[in-house]
Image 1 (tube, rainbow, N blue to C red):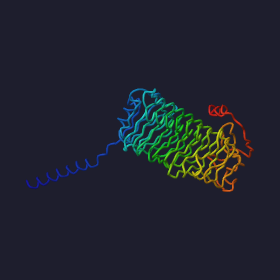
Image 2 (cartoon, helix red, strand yellow):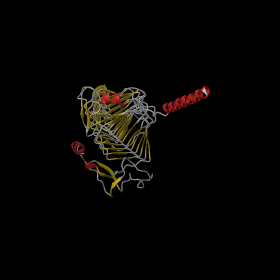
Image 3 (cartoon, helix red, strand yellow):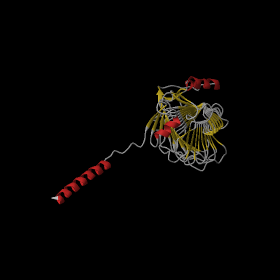
Length: 399
């Protein structure tokens, strides 16, 4: 009888232990990241990042953020998303006392900064954001009135792979790269607008050794100024530029793009170089290819020029017309047209094409679209119209 009782008790204990073990195994996994609101949950952006942790989200309420904890913010090597409430309502004003963000760890591979404005940032490298080794996504942001020795708004170096999408860069200044200086290995710049930025080299963008971004796509460069490369300064890089507009930029050489010595093979495709000052493009490199581009109405120089005989860029399926320094093309140029591109509204900054333009697919011998814009109006003559530089600057101010 006693033995039977012991067996019954032992079975009950084992059953209880099993239930306890099962309970431990089936406990829910705790959440690994938090959503933090600034300033309601944490007082500053830095405190929000620290509290959110890996893969967390920091949501910044509308307002203007200044001072300690809101500038010189360190992402701490975290893959964290920092999102404002819109670039027109969430503003980080650095007040010329530092930059907004630094990302310096390979662990920042999926960090995101979005929907905010960085204003009045300054530092030696990257007045708004400094990136080294990290691979963040920066999207739907505005950078204005930032300054640095290099990379007025943003500087990327090392093995960094930034993805910069749908951002606006206005009135930033630097020695190299008024808006951006990129020395990183990968990444992309897509759908961005660069206006009124100023530098010695590359008024908007300086792509320098060993920059190898695969693509600059669908960007607008307007009213930028530099000694060399009014919009873009391009050296020792194989980055391709596609579907971009260069309008009203100014430089002594290369109002649109200055291409320095290069042993790589970049391609510049379907771009419109219109009403620049100093030439749409100026090349020192032997292996660049321009295809399906418009070089038109440069105020002081040829649409596309090379430094010396013997340098052999390839230019094909392009249109060159109305340039003050002449429409001839240098290098290996084949299958090009020297006719009015027929723009819908040069005087108003409308660079879409008249439906009877030879730049419209189907209207030229090659059956391809030429330039960064499609047809935007009906048939027109689009007569060559002389515009003063002051009138062109007026176009930018009105937009």
